[in-house]
Image 1: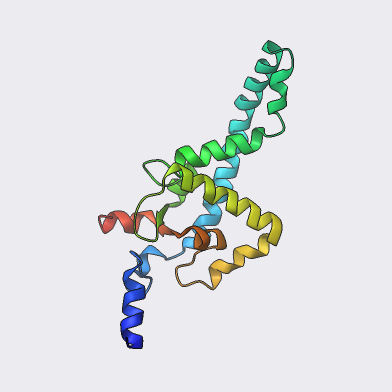
Image 2: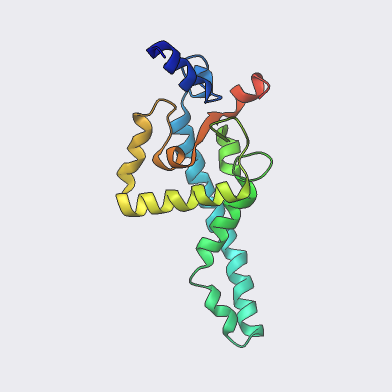
Length: 166
């Protein structure tokens, strides 16, 4: 197989190509930062009713429910990702406002388990390898971050996806 044939075969595995569909990737990293900040605010806001629920649950169960306080942030954040990023829009509310949508390398929408794994690998990669690992997006062909590469997902401009009917 020639080099050109190999390149064509590799490109055909991916539904989105920055060389031919540049509008899908324009400004995606800055949009992801905006979406992340907005989602962090939403998750912190969801912690208030979740905390009150655990407080009441603790009173009802004579203190046993209060054992949910330590993992509460992780529970709320993972549920938020599973229900939003893994939902029909394949984007969290912050991502929808910023105009970002996640897809798999083959073009399929995200599903809840993949969304949870995406969040967990992000947390662990940033926690273990420091936030500098996010610089990977500056050097990848599809502007993917490390956790995107590991899971085979890509962040795309939602408006460009809609214009293309994808």
